[in-house]
Image 1 (spheres, rainbow, N blue to C red):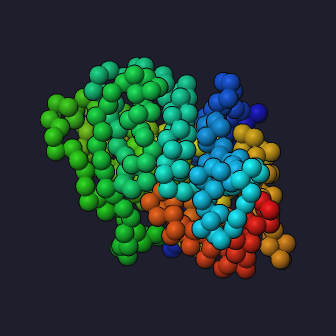
Image 2: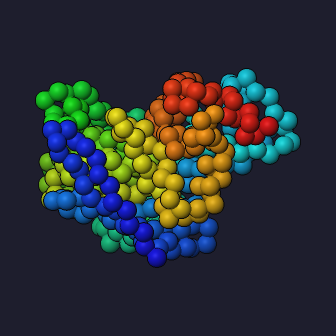
Image 3: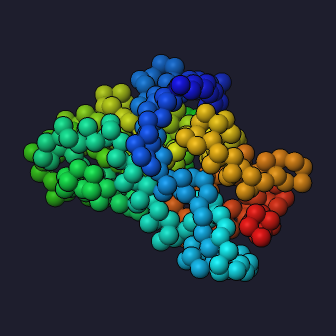
Length: 348
């Protein structure tokens, strides 16, 4: 059975970004599962969705099983907690940091791109027609080229893109725009650029600002580009709606993400927790266990309703200490509780 949900985001100047998304019934293939969908925004082309489930994506989005002897458990030492080495416990994906997060993400991306829709696309692509574009910083940790190779045997050129969102008060509503610092395509000939029909891009989606600018940049640089396949382990509905509304419409765009779409909280819509609705999840029991792990604050509010799935986003890969500090600050601000308290009551 499919699931549909409406959304509405204020964009300033009285403008409301309205639409809905629909997720189809999951198709299971052994330990993997895939779920197609579409996001619709009033007055804009449909945005294709492809969600994936695997043991790796579940550990990334929900909870993973560990022991004190597991290197991932080093986060407990950072928090000043000790734990018996032979006892199993669980940690949410937000606390899988640094190189451990990279390994988990690479595994999840390989599973994500094993979807029937993506495999079919590669099978019908000729030599030189597919190119990979990891976006600095986080996208460099996805292992996109390796994933494409392992899935299809296709060796693709890889173009590193350094793109960020920066303040710009001249941009309506959000007040930010994409700034492109590096686009490593100077060695490509005009003929090689003309051959590219599919761009596989790697970057998570919060506000969508970088992707909106990048869609325009890719379309200008590659004149025969037909499709952009965006691999976004974390993808917030707010950012996806902005991409659907503001991106140019002469190239098809599909989003590949882990497990579920994410909510977005005011005032800036940057913090992106899970939706609580069980229909949003391949395994509702995984969402419920995740919700119980975070627990409630003293006022009875469920912490998972505000726990951002990304927090520092790329900091979780590059600066674990900063990631932990950001989590701590948000928990104190929103719930008056420390990360140490939550971990202690959840695993001890």
